[in-house]
Length: 335
Ligand code: ATP
Ligand code: FE
Image (cartoon, rainbow, N blue to C red; front, side):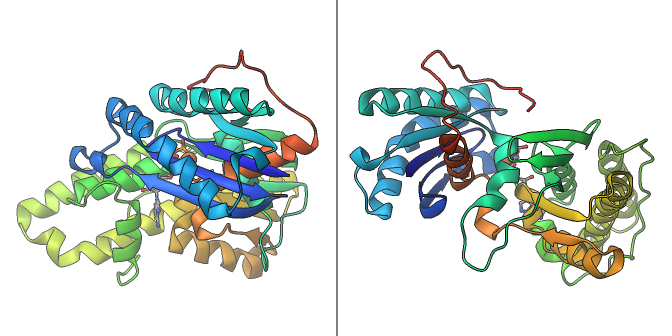
């Protein structure tokens, strides 16, 4: 079974070919244009998707060494995401499926961040059901109870900013370019995580809040810079390490709580922020500290990519769960 996966929910245009759940190609065209604006500009994103989609899909097919006529089905991101961006992938997928006369499969982007764990990879075990998925990305922060591939329940989520936003907005305050998450990660590696304590928010149940941290970082940095204009330059590593340490503590605390409440000790992370080295390390430590069995996806399947869309396509293909031409993109969807 050959599946073409297409992802265009935000600012990455991606296409991937999977053969029976195994990735043959995974092409990602990232849009550099947004860097200068310090965030994704929706109009520019959809225009770049329009320019990228044909060459990206062609390249994915070429790299996989197959022909268009070999495809069994086309899977695409229906949402959630930016409407203009989603529309490009959705209409492209529809017209290609129509012309090739093959089934069309709609995919939920957040479900895909979780099901990326089921991509067939050597040396990578798949989590066993039921497990808890912590999805941490640019737009979402969720703890999901996963009972089966398509039986998922959100048991906790952010009430304001997503964790990726907390990283990116803190980075912006420190004068780092967008997206700042990976840069905070980089600078944090040689910093002291306990140099500058930031308080953790108090949020009921399994929900998260990150907007307070961003404000705390802003006030803290403003105050320090007033006393010493070179504060950021002199303390960048320690500040980054302290911010990252606080964020990781918030995430691990809620995971501990979720694990206790559900009795589930298998934990998988997904989404762009799961590329973070500190989070990966803390999760691994959880294996010894709390008896968890943890799963971290391969690096290239953490941030937006079409391979994760393709694996959901494959799993739905096996169930003959197809959609028809009346399907429309949707900016907000739950599962
Ligand atoms: P969503 O999946 O919610 O629609 P998105 O697709 O924009 O949002 P992803 O591509 O999954 O988000 O993740 C992007 C986010 O991940 C950005 O906020 C980025 O800063 C963050 N990120 C990527 N690498 C790291 C890292 N090493 N450390 C911290 N954050 C990171
Ligand atoms: Fe994403």
